[in-house]
Structures are given as structure tokens and as C-alpha cells.
Image (cartoon, rainbow, N blue to C red):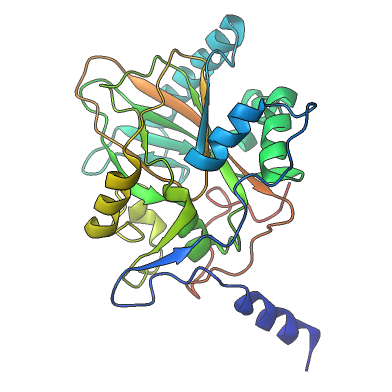
Length: 302
């Protein structure tokens, strides 16, 4: 038997989170740690913060960026939004049933300022503590949610999609959301279900080919069923970690989250940096389909 064949068998054998293969949703127990390091007095977060992330699946840090940094990133994000409106690049995602810019992907590769932000030493110390290793950027983007017209992002677990469509083997990744404007309870902020990261909701529905072309505008596959989502919310509630511009939210790859549309006059835009452990490299998508483009799922561990 060739080494390549052995490797392929090994990659298939590690799928402990099968999804989109059954006719009914299933709940699987999490097989991976949440915090991958043991806390000590030199850790970059307090014991209380580490425990909060372990139990709730997210961590909110107010005032992470100083005013000078914030103004700089706000300008870069506004300029990028204006440029993106006229761009035909695949990295520009439009709103469903419209042409307004919803997201711009791979910003750490196309904009040096965001590349530098992704490598911020203070941020990396926390990320590497939570994931227990060196990391790389799996995905980066800016989500724009303008006043009056910004559309919702439906409930989902990022890991379910990254596992099925990208081939991320285990739950050893997280997202960092950096607020570029004040996030209020009423302008479509991130909503999370505390504790939901301890279970994996195996979804139903075979993934269509080239699903990403539609799902980034409006996700319809890889979303939780209403019964399990209702149960999770009844058990854990819904938190909206909101604060002033410059704050960040770190949240586990498997936490159930989403956001409402923004019908207020107050815009909301956030930078997202997704960090994956270098020990959790992507394999072939568990859907058996072609891997999504590199601007959505970086497969080079760099």
C-alpha cells in the first residue's frame, strides 16, 4: 500500500464530527479541549478570563486598540469599502439580492496594514495561549453592516462549515472580531449562545457544489435545526458582547453565533481574523468536494 493511500485513510479516520450526511440532525459531544494551555501566572489572560472562555466559549476585551490605531484602521476599512464597490474581484461578497458590499475577504494578504494587525504581539500571545501552539490565519475579512440596510448573518457554527467544506480536522481555531464602530445591542451586533461550543450540531442536507458562492451571501446549508438551537438558547441564553470601537471579541470556532440585520442609523463594521493552530492543518474537505478558494480558507499555513 502506498504512503499516499495510507495518508488518505488516516485523514478519513479522524473525522469525529461527521455532518451533512444524515437525514436527521445529530448532537455530538465535543472531542477537543476549549483552552489548549494550562493557566499560570505568566499567561496573557487572567485565571477568570481563561475560565470564562472555557465555560462560555468567548471573551470580550474592551479598549484593545488605542485611539490612534483605531482611527488608522477605520480609514483603511472605509477606503477599502469604497474601492470594493467598483471591484469585480471574487473576494468581494455582496449582500443577498443587492450589490452593496457585505464582506471583503483575505484582507491580511492584500493590505499590509491588516497583515501587521493580524500579527499584533499582544493579540498573538492570547490566541496562542488559547490554542496552545503557534497559529496562522485561516481566514480574514471585514464585514460591513451599514445603517438601515445591513443584512443578518444566520445562526451557525463556523467549525461545522470549516470542517465539512474546508477540511479542518479538529476544534482548534478561533475568531477575533475587532469593532471598528461602537457596537450596540440594537445595531446588529454579534450574538453568541454561551456553552453551545461544548456540543457539535451535525446538520442535514448534502452540500451543493461551489456552495460558497451563495453561502457567503446567505447561508442555507450547515445551519442548525430549530429544535436544537431552541434547546441551546434555553440552556445558555444569548449574549451580545458589545462595546466601544476598538474592543475585541475572541470566540471559539464551534460556538453558535449570528447577528440581526441593522435597521438603525448606526453602521457596524468589524475586522475578523480567524486563527488556526499550525497543528490543525487542513486536509481534504470532509464533504468529499473540491476545496474552497484560498481567499476563504488558507491551506498554506503561512
